[in-house]
Image 1 (cartoon, rainbow, N blue to C red):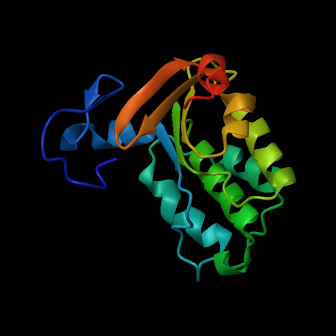
Image 2 (cartoon, one colour; image 1 turned 180 degrees about the horizontal axis):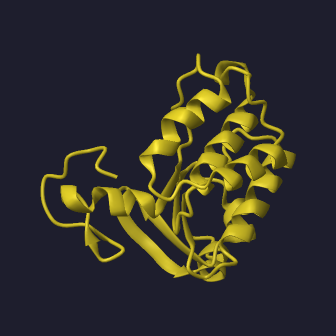
Image 3 (cartoon, one colour; image 1 turned 120 degrees about the vertical axis):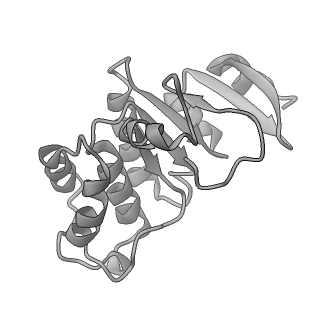
Length: 176
């Protein structure tokens, strides 16, 4: 996502070279992000935060955002610092899904969520990937979440891939 400067090699996303300035908008338009930690401006309201995020995407869909705000019962005028962790994650998901992304990249999105919110979150991801042109890249330590949603799992230990496989074969291997 060009948050870090690479020191070598090449990364291609959707057939486009990441890091190439001319591709950055095209790549960003196809990717939604949900970070494990709140990276929003805490003093802003949900509506104000949307006002900052929406212009970053050429395919922003206001109707989709409104649909998720309603579905998640997100309060438009409440400051982000007043939201629970679950509500902040729902806001992040609403923003990530509101520009017709083809790929969601998520870092520990369900960590710290109560079981009901976590289940809702996974259900929405499951609906998202029903369109087979869409994918979710999901890092987590909660393997029960993987069991519910993942088709393919890659375990990484100390920077090395130790088990790229279909979901069930990795999750059943107790030696990992």
